[in-house]
Length: 297
Image (cartoon, rainbow, N blue to C red; front, side, top):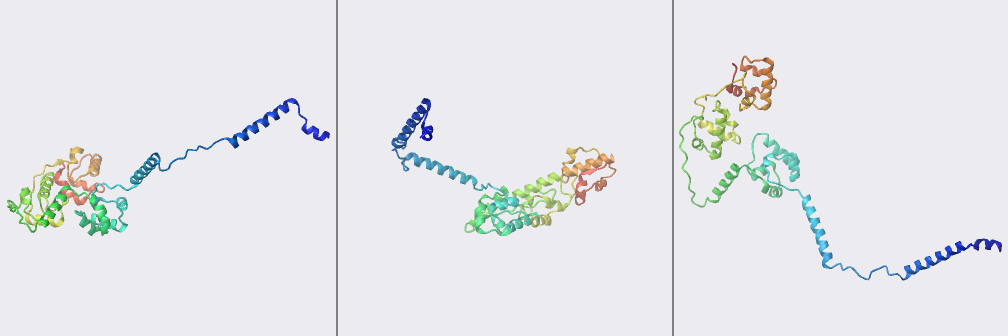
C-alpha cells in the first residue's frame, strides 16, 4: 500500500499543475473535435479571375519560347561562317562548298547560285533565302534581269549602245566602258574610281583588282582597251615620306608600312627603292606596283 501511495501522493502545487494540465488537454481536444478549420467557400476553377491568371501564364510561356527561337537578320550569304551556317541548319559539307567557292575570289549573287554552289535542299533555301542581302548593285541587276524576262512578250525599248570614243583605258569614260557587254553604270563608275586611286592604270592586269569584276568580263574590257600611255604618277621619297602618306599607296597596308619604317630606321637611308626587297616577308609579287609610287632620293 505504501508503494502505490508513494506514486500518487503529491503536494498542493503539484496537484494544481496536474489540474491545469488536464483542463488544457480537455480544451485542446474540444477545439480539435468541434472547431471548424475549413471554409465552406470553394474556388471556382472556371471563374474569370482563374482564367485570366492562366492566360497570363500562357502568354509568358509563349514569350519565353519565342525568345529562345533563333532570330535571323538580313545577311550577305557570301560571308557565312561555320558557326553561322550551323545556326542556319546547313551541313558541314554545304558550308565547306561555300567556303571553297569563296576562296576562288568569286561571289554568289543570287539564291539560285547559292543553291548551285552549296547544294542545299529546296526547303532550307526557302527558309533562309528571304534573309539574303546582296549589295544594291547586285539587287538592281537581278531585278533588271527579271524584268526583262517578264517583258519578253512586250515590246521593250532598248537604249542605243554608247559609241566608243577611245581605246586608251586611262582616257576612257564611263560611257566607253559601258560599250562592253557585262559592264553597266555601276561597274563603269567603279573602274574609273579605282583608276583615279591608282593615278592611272600602268598595267592591264590592274583591271582585275577592281572589286567584284569577274575575270571573263575583265578580259572583254582588255580586249578592247589597252594602256596606250603610261600615267604620270606622283612619287613619294621613301626616305622622307610620312607614315600617313605612305599608307595612301594602294598596295601598302598598315603592317607593310610599319615594316618599311622599321627598316628605314635601321638603315638610316635607303640608297635605292629595290632595297625594299630585303624587308622580311615583303610581298615581292607586288613590288612592281609598289615602286610605281616611290623613289629613293
